[in-house]
Each structure stands twice: as structure tokens, then as C-alpha cells.
Image (cartoon, rainbow, N blue to C red; front, top):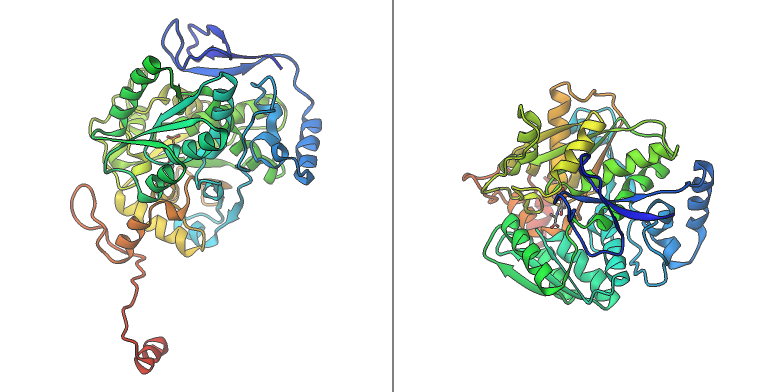
Length: 435
Ligand code: F0G
């Protein structure tokens, strides 16, 4: 199916070949998206084909991204695709979290089950495939941690050199460790994420490095498959709501595009509503949705949150995100540090666990249900974006009551589970266990 890059801006809609190395519209500067023309296969054929591939041993078919390749046909050939078997993430029922959120039932789609532990892998296999197709040698990203971990892994697996730009001191150790282990040239810059991304965008052009942030439209294509896989797992029955955390707003852009395309292809009959949750100290998109004028986003100059993955004040993909929230009749909520921390511990108690940013979903659901914006009997899927082991430091501090809020003061360990230090004494240990 012929693929092109199209300017996202309705007034412009200029088209460019997918083989051009561009990230913004050369004519008007807006975001770009991949568009496809030509006839799609009938929905029933696609469903059957994708299902049949689940019994295949071919690497491409075993990928939870490339199994759906008819839905992202931007490559001329699949020969050089590198897959670490990304996607294939479970839908997990969580009654305890549902009760906490005020819902009758709640399902998590856990993207932390990915090879590098976050949803970034769904997009990265596509971004790296495109880098190879373009003949690039070096790839780079600015990251709050997960993008860098994912890019480092996929680039190294593909024989490309990964270069990661991260804000010094504001990334979880699990993520930094991954970037190092996967062999990325790792630059820790004394600046926040927004400043680091702006810097990298200037450098990438000058040095001919391929940029793999979520402004890269091919990463968005890969992240679409999170929604495709979810719908397949649900027998193509859309939930009422899909809830996800929002940082740079690439993922919500991908989800919205996927859902609209699934509906256009006749694979689903209606759009679920999309709810984005931001941390209170980094909530520019929340502010935008409440502003009288939605034509301009006011960046948050000094974003603050312990959920470092979403510590972003100037989200690049906000125009796309706005379109998707509006198209789906969705909404945006914000939550406090305490709310994130408690929701995270509740998800942990379900035996599921996730990183702080992911827990913003459950915290947001609880608020939205209490406010009457989401009905208690609604069918809700929340996206857990990252693995519990990404940020062990946060976990230990929460459970031992020393987690400090960026605004000052301690986070209360309302669901704390402190380790008990005991002497090597059988009687004393038995007494503790008897209590
Ligand atoms: N959850 C996690 C665990 C993330 O790592 C991110 C983004 C988000 C949510 C927000 O997604 O940006 O698409 O709105 N992390 C990026 C990174 C920014 O560099 O790893 P978004």
C-alpha cells in the first residue's frame, strides 16, 4: 500500500515521500504523520491473518508489532527489521485496583512486559527499521529514560550506534542502567527534558543523526499496535474508556490514530473515549483543555514530579493529542504525587506492579469516577506503560516512609510495607510471624 508523510496541519496537508529524512513539515513546520492510500483488505481477512500468525515461528510473526504489519505498511521490505518480540503484552484483570478506583471492574494492559520494560519498544522497532531503510548509521533521542533504554537496545541489535541525551539527575536508575548496558553513548545534560530535546533537534540536523523521539512519525506507527493488539485480545469489542499517562503526548497520538484507523477499516464499530492523566507539577496539557483558547499550549517552565517519565513541560505532540482527545470525546485529568504513590502501591498489591508514571492512570480513574466523569460500571482499560523494576529507588523510599515530594514534605506510605530488620534468632523471628 503506498505510504507517504503528510503534514498534520489541516490548512497545509503537504505530502512528502517516506524516504525523506524530515521530522516536521518543511513547508509550515507542523508535525508529520504517516498516511496510506489504496484499498485495505477486508476486516475479516485481516483478523484471520493476524490470528493465524500467532501459531507461526517466524520472528516477524512473533512480534506483537509486525504481526499487524498490514496496519503500518511504510516499509518496502521487511528483510532488515529487527524484532526483540516486542508487544504481546497481557490484559490483566485487577479487582483490587478496580475497587480502589471506584469501578466494578478494571483491566490493565501492561506494556511493562515488553523486552526493555516499556511501551517504547512497540514504536522503537519501527523507528529503527526506518533508520536502516534510510541508511542512517547513528540514531539519537532525548529521553526521560524509557525511550533511551529502548532505543539503545534496538539500535545495538540492529548494528547502529545509539546516542542518548538525558536530563542529569532526573532519570530512574533502572533506565539509565539499561542505556549503559545496551551500549549507548550516554550524555547526561544539565538541563530538563524539554531543553535537552530542543538541543538535540538542532544537533541531529547538523550531524546527520537520525532522531528517534516520538516526533518521529514511524515510532507512532509502531505504538498504534498497542491498540490493535488490545482490540484483538478483547475480541474486537471496544472498551468505554482507555486511560493512559501523558508526558510528551506521543502515545495518546498513536492510540487515537490507531483507533480511528481501526474504525475506518471496519475492525471496530465505535471509538473508546481516551483519558489522559498528567502529574500535577507537569500538567500543561491538562491546562490547555481548560483554557478558553486551545490554539496554543502554555509550557510549564519547571515541570516537577517524582514520576520522572512524565516530567515534561512542553510536550511536542500536543496538537495531535488534542485532536485525538477531542475526536474521542475524551478528557484530561491531573493527579498529585501522593495520589500517584498510593495508586502505584495498590497496583503492586494486585501482584502486577508498574513504574510511577503508569500509576497515574489508576489515580486519575479514582478521581474521575468520584467526580462522576467515568461511571462505576464503565468498561475501562488502563495502560501501564512501564515495568515495576524501572524505578526501585522510588519503591523503597515509599515503603519506608522517606519518599520526598518535589514540593517539599514527605509522601505518606498509606499502603506502606516496610521490611522488618530482625536478629538471627529463631525464637524472635517465630514471635514476629505469630503476631
Ligand atoms: N509512561 C512512561 C513509563 C513513559 O516513559 C512515558 C514517556 C510516558 C508514560 C508518557 O508517554 O510521552 O508518549 O505521553 N517517556 C518518554 C521517554 C518521554 O523519554 O522515555 P508520552
